[in-house]
Amino acid sequence: MAEKNYYDILGISKDASPDEIKSAYRKLAKKYHPDINKEPGASDKFKEINEAYECLSDPTKKSNYDQYGNANGPQGFGGFDGSAGFGGFSDLGDIFGNIFGGFGNSRERRNMSSKGEDLQVQITISFEEAVFGAKKDITISRIENCSKCNGTGAKNGTEYSTCSDCHGTGQVRYQENSLFGRVIRQGPCKTCNGTGRIIKEKCSECNGNGYKKVNTTISFNIPAGIDNNQVLTMPGKGNCGKRGGQDGDLHIIIKIKPHKILVRDGYDLNLKLYLPFYTLLLGGEVEIPLAKGTTTLKIPELTQSNTIFKLKGKGIKYLDRELYGNLLVTVIAETPKSLSKSDKKALEEIKNSIKPDSFTRYKNYKKDLDSLN
Ligand SMILES: [Zn+2]
Ligand SMILES: [Zn+2]
Image 1 (tube, rainbow, N blue to C red):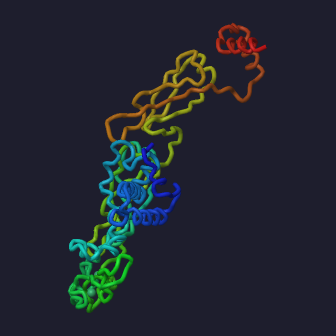
Image 2 (tube, protein in one colour):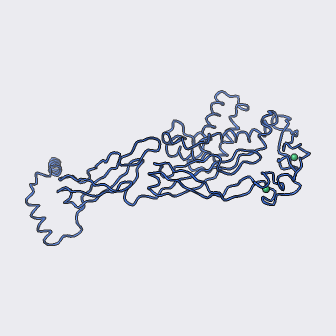
Image 3 (cartoon, rainbow, N blue to C red):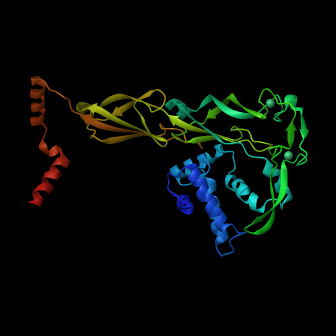
């Protein structure tokens, strides 16, 4: 388990919605922001809040955290997630951008742009694809910059003029009285909607928006060993950013169809194998399934019911290394549902011929039972 409980830090329940997570974070971030809160410990608390939000606001990290108690998932799994989690800090930018904005030069331009939204899709793959890996294509609907107008929204990408109110910056400054006294604020220019451009003639392809929804096919690899509910993140494959902002990410949630017979447990496979009781007594060979193909399992004579046979390395390959889990076969004696007269007669004969002393566990049970009285 994680040392810190991110849900407790943000004061929310485990099933809080993304909106609830965001709003809890905003409240706390404002309360403990080092520029506002000068109490000792506030800055540590602020860091902790950001850490919690960075994890819980990112579907990949949240899913890992819920499953494995840390944002990176099982060891090495972090390799898939190429997106560094600065979600918390860019959000902070838009909270404090309004209060503190307008003072830093570098922030001015950045305030105009916005990161594209992350997209989330779910795909179901077969058991074999999860075990051995696969190449997949999915078609998603994402917002992309309009190529016809180069994202300007103006016909041919040229039919616009520079906004005279903001001189093309998309931002205007104004004075306002606030909690902190009189401040100079900066906000998007209303004349041009923060784009810095006045469109003379709209691009017909995107109706002047500069971006449009497009169905696009994305190819990706499923790594061998992936487990149910794990998330693959493809940086930059979400919706496109606006006004030069970063593109969002695409999160692919993996669902795996169960195998008909084998049950997966991490990298191990389990098989509950019911065998006719005489096979356990006399021994024999049985065919058992592997992740791919089958193999023969030798049952020695006088095998007890519930014996587990461990087939080393016949499980699933680890995601991050050349190591395989095991196949664990539990054999269980099955007794017939019905017996013929001659079956019964034969069994009676066996019953009479086997010495009661050979059932050591039953013998010990009787002894213990007697000692109770
Ligand atoms: Zn266009
Ligand atoms: Zn303007």
